[in-house]
Length: 116
Image (cartoon, rainbow, N blue to C red):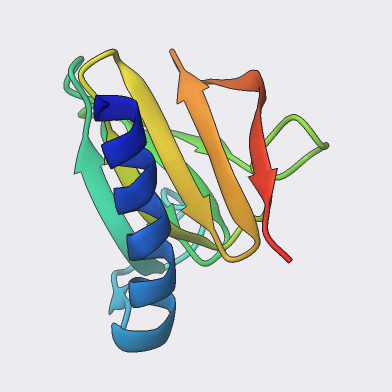
């Protein structure tokens, strides 16, 4: 049930943020993958996940790790529009073209849904 609710929430945010909200512009200064921040969430381990127009960023308090679309098993698209962290330690990532799920910073095989 929680998984279904989180999935529904991510898809809802995907469309709502894409159509209604304005991204926040922060100075990138060689840290974020892009200076336009669309969404942020903190996971159970304390990482801050930041979705931008060009990739997903994980901040551990001092450094960033950036995730991009590199193949069919990674992010569906680099335009990250919504994020949801669930109680099982998974991160649901909504992009402009689909949805994927990461566990421990790694995309889960078979959980990558393309839209359209």
